Length: 320
Picture (cartoon, one colour):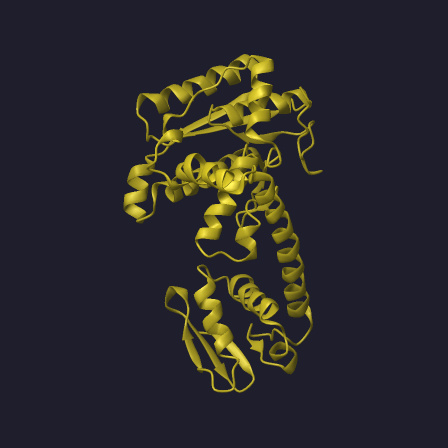
């Protein structure tokens, strides 16, 4: 069997502690053993019990605890009532689970002062993500899918070393190593959109296109990531020029701003509102409305999240 090569950035030093998010399922167990093969001796296993599958969830946590003890690794396990969190926050179960995991991993990062977290997302996960984002009307950032290295606002660095690895390769590795793992019954439930993409949409696309579409989706993600990074860099370079963002954080409506291609000016507004003003919820509708204010007959005021407003007067834009 060909060796699986992990895509690890320089920040992942086998001699240093690193957090590993582990569910006990095949993918995270495979990543654990691959990391051990690569010389990572100071892994900290982090498992969050979402409380969604009763005894099965409890058994998953027990499995991870036993595995950590067997390998002599540190292990952190917490339980979160994700269903209650989703209802309270009016979020989907999947979104609430993701937010709970990130909050848990942040607590572990603060506890150990280790800010790199390894995740076991693989190539099929990436294809499902890109397809799902496409169906939501995403831009280039969404078409890029998940990044191998993703830095969260909290300071956490999420690293996905298996993002280029096919599920069949992971299965073959586990079989060759005779590794035990847990099966998550929810992975086959049509209740979750991701499962329907995996078990229905992608096989149908394979059949229609008479080919395995996953490599094509990965190629799309790579090209979209390159293009998005280039446009983001142009926008950032624009904002870094002295005099374009004023001391009061307002944005100068200059001839240079008006001359920008919309692909760049939209990112200028997104960076300015998110990074300079620290505003959440800056989506397509907000950016489209902001761009409309640059027109000669554009509005002088538009709504922003959190009850704030974007205002324009003369040659200046600001948030109030």
